[in-house]
Length: 216
View 1: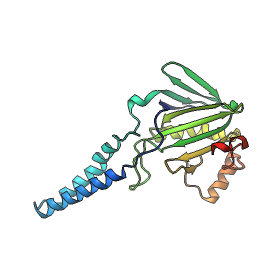
View 2 (view 1 turned 180 degrees about the horizontal axis):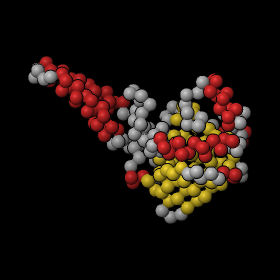
View 3 (view 1 turned 135 degrees about the vertical axis):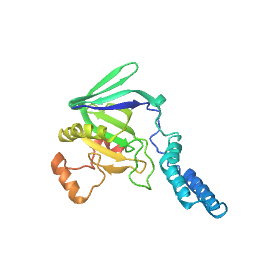
């Protein structure tokens, strides 16, 4: 099994820009312009509808990609590959192999999938992910990578499941509000949590190793 992602410069901030002010101002201008075109110029409301649809699916996404948090080609510095027993981080100058057997805990914060939203009211996410790996010798290894499509998550899931089963403590957080997920799933009812605890052989998803409490 293998899951491959683009390595992103660690200087890239994890905080996503929601562009709320831009959205409000642009929406106000469009509404006022639409009202003027319909009332004063007698333009067909159907045309206004087409313009609004164009904003949602073309102009809006274009504006979102101009924000500073959006991962651009210049931010890509290499690749990250997850395998059954280890992961490998490759950049332009060197390659680092990390064996899972050396790890005690994994902390990952990720911003969903690049270009995707959870709902019509949700922002378009940038797909940036940050992972921190703590070894049994208390060494910290960290990097950032880009999640570009659902297939990458699906490729990673069986590897991720084996990491849980191996006894490594894993904490997943999604987005600016750090919503908890397990196996990249945020729909966590009580019944589902119990089922996942049994499936992944985990006694707790919330209690990290005591010496890592400062990292919560």
